[in-house]
Length: 155
Image: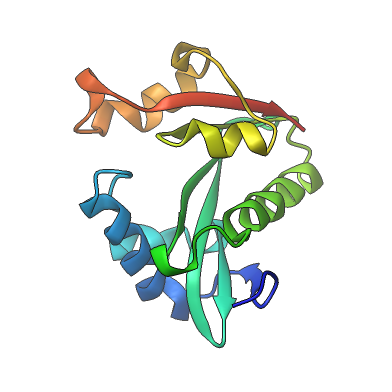
C-alpha cells in the first residue's frame, strides 16, 4: 500500500465492530484500555476511521472536557498498516475538527511519546488535566500505576 491509498472519514455505526477489533488488539498488548462495543456505539460520533479498500484499518476518537480543552484518544492502526502516515492523518483530522469547535488545547495520554512529539505535542504533568483524572482515570485499572505519558498541544 502506498501512502494515501487510504481515506479518513467520520465513523459510522457500521464501523463499531471494526473499531472494537482494532482497539482490542492494542488492549491485548497492554498499549491501551479496551473499549466495549457499547462504549464505541455510544461515542461513534466522536470517532474517525482510516479506510483502505473498504476495510477499516485505523481509528481515533476525541473527547471534550471544556469548551477549550479536548483529548485525542483510542488512536490505533492495525499493525500491518503502521508506518504509512495513517496515525498522523487521523490525528490531523481530529485536530481539524477540534479547531472548528473552538478548542485551543488538546492532550493525549500515551505510551508512544515519540509519535506525538513528531506531530507537535510536548510532555506535561498529568495533574494539569484534573478533568481527565476525575472523569476517566478514577475508573481505570491502572490508576495507581499509570505508565502513560501526558502530552499537550496548542491548536
